[in-house]
Image (cartoon, rainbow, N blue to C red):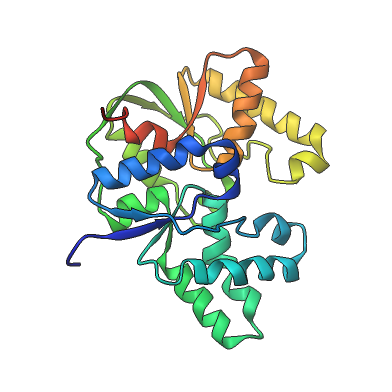
Length: 246
């Protein structure tokens, strides 16, 4: 590949509302690695909550609006396994009755990557040249692990980070209990699942639990805060980006 790599950031609605610092960290990280980053305006939700609740026609409406926003993007980078899965795996199927839109959705799906996959599999960057001190553990978000089949890229990036002691999280592949609207519709079940996850995080001895999905971060950070735990919940981008440059 010749010339600079160009990538568009699909920031996601949870990222925009609750974790804007993650978007800033991604831009800083990608630029440091030589990527030209842009942010297509007028982004909204990718449609995943509608899709998961059975409102496929409404989700298709959202997808129909989203696809042209990223039509000119060389690569699309997503700080969420869930939203990347929606675009890559479900967008094309929403337009089975519209061959032209299905082709556009498939083209976008091929250009879309969750952050850790983009770093390792597109840029070939197993080391990002920054440091982060402390004992860190990693939680596998459900869509990234099961939907996109990814478990190694985040661990490779964390394990190669100067100053990090990466320890495996007991039950790392088990849900944190967020599950989008699941945590609202079945709060008692969600809370029970979260309690097990938080206990395992603390059992690991880590000072920081890292995830690649804002939903998981919301869930785990809330549980840790209510328990008075000193463990931090951070997005992978926040750990990899390093300190702000003066």
